[in-house]
Structures are given as structure tokens and as C-alpha cells.
Amino acid sequence: MERTLILLKPDCVERRLIGRVISRFEDKALTIVAMKMMQVTPELAKKHYAEHVEKPFYPALESFITAAPIVAMVLEGLDAIRVVREMLGKTNGLQAAPGTIRGDFSSSRQMNLVHASDGPEAASREIALYFQANELVNHAPCLSPWFRASDE
Image 1 (cartoon, rainbow, N blue to C red):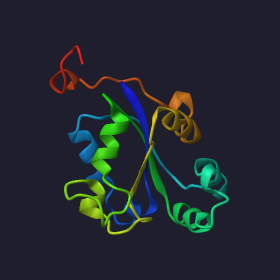
Image 2: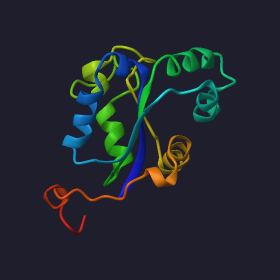
Image 3: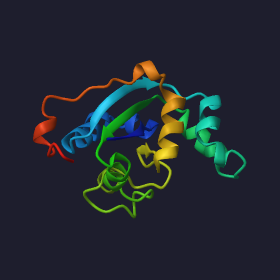
């Protein structure tokens, strides 16, 4: 099992797409092991986007991510990082394929609804930014045997 951080960004929250996006992850048999609504502070934004802080586009990025609440989640599942990123589609909603979350709901590069960790190291670092260890629930839903074989 692999875990990944998901942020339903301010545009997702403000457009009232939270439930629709979460249901797609649940439909894919990904398990939510942590979730909370929160306001990203400028300090947290600088930690999360540390590699971009000195870039010219960073002020707009920080302004966007701090503009309204987000929903932070940790999803768990087989190959969760790759699966989630494929479900999201390309970063630019105009280039994302129909059927992906961004392809169906986004028409912007920046306002692309959802952030997802891009690898195991990023997932570990990002999860620690948004959640304490005691906020992560170890839980196997009773339906798990119906989503995958026991040897997967």
C-alpha cells in the first residue's frame, strides 16, 4: 500500500466540487486515511512550495493557495501516487483528457482543482506538513476484499 497527499485547492472548495472529487477517489477503491478542511497560511505555502519560492510566479501561487480553505487528505491504495496523478490528468485543465478530474472540471493551468504528491519522497514530506502522525488512521474498509485480490 502506498500513501499520497491530496489537496483540494481553493477553486475546488469554492466551486463546491469537494464531494464529486472525493467520490471519484472512493470509486477507484482508494482509502481516505486522513482528511481535514483548513486554511493554508503563507508560512505553510512557503514550506509546501519551497522549490518555487524564488521563482517569479510564486507570489501568485501563494495568493491563490491561501485565498480560501482547502481540504487536505491522505489517500492509501495500491500504486496510489501514480493512480491519483493519472486520475487528475495533465496540470493544465485545457490539455487534460476528458474523463480525468481536471479534464472534466478545469480549464486553467493554475486553477486546476487538486494537488497530488508526485513521488514517494514528496508524499512523505508533504503528508508531514499537513498531518501529525496521530491524525492518520490505519483502517482497511470491509469492502477491501472486493476491490483487489489478497495477493495484490
